[in-house]
Length: 283
Ligand SMILES: NC(=O)c1ccc[n+]([C@@H]2O[C@H](COP(=O)([O-])OP(=O)(O)OC[C@H]3O[C@@H](n4cnc5c(N)ncnc54)[C@H](OP(=O)(O)O)[C@@H]3O)[C@@H](O)[C@H]2O)c1
Image (cartoon, rainbow, N blue to C red; front, side, top):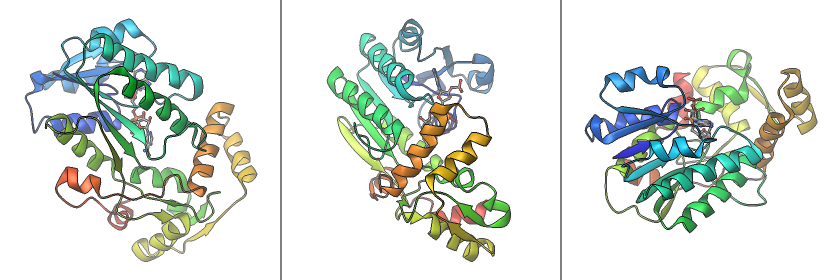
């Protein structure tokens, strides 16, 4: 059986939809926090089990009889994120899971700018030390985050972001989901680390150019100071930890932590991936 954590989230749900094309629903366990939100999965014949990354006992129960676990990285920040992800790895190990597949980020490291990448680094280490077979997807930024990054630019074309000329190898989330489903239902991916990226990397200036060419918008990119960006985030009354997280993302992009490209995704999909031009046209 294959257990999918974060099964009510975007990537988890999409992965399950691709898994259903490759295996029977009875082989899939959807691990969720809120079973009421997973009624569609239960109706499809998938076992829904409730667990929280903060509750090791619930995780162990959720992974009962699972040979493989897809560990979707947490949405938490900082120390809680490290603890939650460690709990998932430990529970999988305790339950004798043979193979864990983990959604990491493109440049994990102890001292990298992106705060989530420090968590991912910690989790990758725990997975490698666990003795389970593993496959690590080091995902670049989703194409779907572009509208979130550029905010009101979707209306007026004015892109304000403190990323300099830093480039991102944006990748389409459903393409990642399909590749995850392929890996979870085939052999030969044990103890591999895959960089999952778009075919090219684009700066926010390039995105403004694409808004001009693909959406006929009068677009421009303004590389604003990080302090000005912070001041904007403060207006949204975000907790300080969340503000630090978003700032770390901008610094990370500027420092080229999301710029690498790799053709692994196309090899896993055995077809071309969706490109940024097509995506921008669709939004
Ligand atoms: N590469 C990128 O551009 C990018 C962008 C955003 C996020 N991410 C990372 O990739 C992950 C998957 O992306 P996504 O689009 O699927 O994100 P998403 O839609 O926010 O889904 C995250 C999932 O994680 C679950 N989760 C969070 N905290 C949990 C906890 N304490 N216990 C159990 N489950 C928990 C959520 O459960 P609920 O449904 O109950 O809330 C949700 O199902 C994210 O969690 C984040 O780490 C990557």
